Amino acid sequence: MSDRDDYTSEIRPGERVLDRNPASADDARICFIGEIRTPWGPQDCPRNIGSARQSGQGARIELIEGMGEGLEGLAPGQPLVVLYWMDRARRDLILQAPRHTEAPRGTFALRSPNRPNPVAMSVVLIVSIDARAGVIEIDALDCFDRTPVVDLKPWHASIDSPAELPSGRNP
Image 1: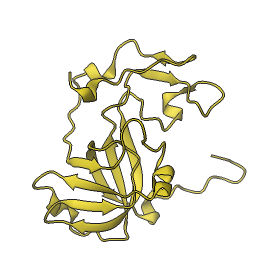
Image 2 (image 1 turned 180 degrees about the vertical axis):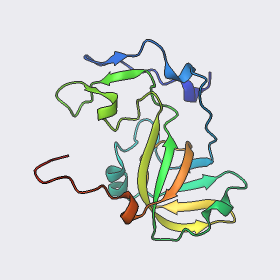
Image 3 (image 1 turned 90 degrees about the vertical axis):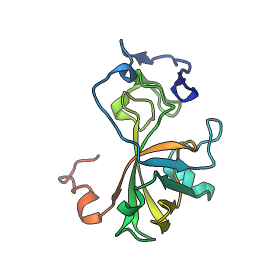
Image 4 (image 1 turned 60 degrees about the horizontal axis):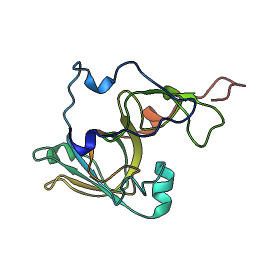
């Protein structure tokens, strides 16, 4: 077991864990395409992308060899969807008690990294691209240094903005 596999932490009152740890399942394969470089570690990582942006600290995505060509067509200033694997998060919590809520909530009602499949998503802005080196400088990201990247996708308002809700409905 590597240090990345050690995601044990205290169980807060009201939290519940699954009967089995989803990390032990052998039913999917993901190919990480690179890693995210940030100044953050477990003690100082921002809680969300907004806080990461407020810090003024940028981030960088470093793709593995051979993936840089996949950046063709992206440009500085463009929004980018980054899917990343929160490899140091718990995977067995199904009911969580965040400090910012009054009562426990189900994992799927939260943006917490603690989930059966710790996939995170953020929309960032591309600052610069070096496709030959497979490096993208971005405005910010709220994850630990060396977090694995699952995928990158361009963000398009015409596709990615949610539909308007019917009158009188609140999200």
